[in-house]
Length: 356
Ligand code: PMP
Image (tube, rainbow, N blue to C red):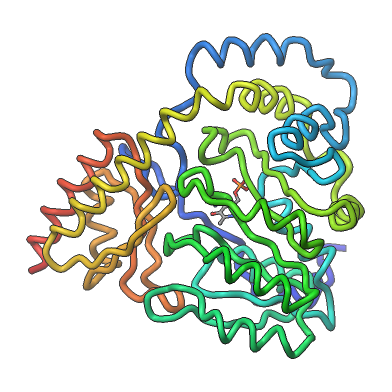
């Protein structure tokens, strides 16, 4: 037979996720860390990798890493779970808490993967849009969960792509108001230095998502983790693929996590550059900026899609959100190294002047 029957009905009309990652001299589109892992650590990583038996399956739950992360966060091993990037764990929450007849509360504009995963798992997405300044419409969220039909909520803090933090007091009120599973996506928390971790002690319905991709320069390795109650982690384990975190990734992450203090100056440099970038960007005529607690900045400019193109012609790749709902004329730039940020600012000045 040379034909195939239709795929699952929920896939109809879906276009695969496209990170729009194009080759460019200055890559500022994917919220990556501008610095690769330093030489000395890479040597240590090579040593660790050399000891990995390649003919054996990895430890399915990456228990050594679980222990390290648990200890650093004052938790038990069974309150931590690693995943193949935060992305896998975002799919797992939809598998474990979503499904036909169940509802996911989304706070757009936010990371588009959440709604995509809901759709793939036949989960209904209920939107409570953010306010005009992109802060959370707290009253509307609390009112919506009080209806009692939401299975899970994802709150991104700092939010991607808009950059702002969720208020900790609000997260606490939400956890009190609902028994829905509330995920706080802290993929960028190292750049805000704020976490809702203390709320875990009192709320079984909280799960926190983190990643090695940003602060720890390991986007290539694909490692993320969740912190939660033992009960919640057990459900995540049920839906995961047994060997999703391979032995080489585990080895790399062990070295990096053991040496995480060495990443601190790099994180601080990004935080410092973020203020400089915001300052430079807000001085450019026609640009409106949004404050950010993450390693990126969102800004608005007339004819943003054209601006994106002209920046790309200058060798600078940023992320175009101008056609996304709620984000008309918005672009997002990752905080890069000082030189990358200067190149971006210079290109922006030239492009903006040409647009006036
Ligand atoms: N959450 C948010 C808000 C993100 O922006 C990202 C990365 N784009 C992730 C989770 C997942 O990151 P990773 O899969 O690289 O761990």
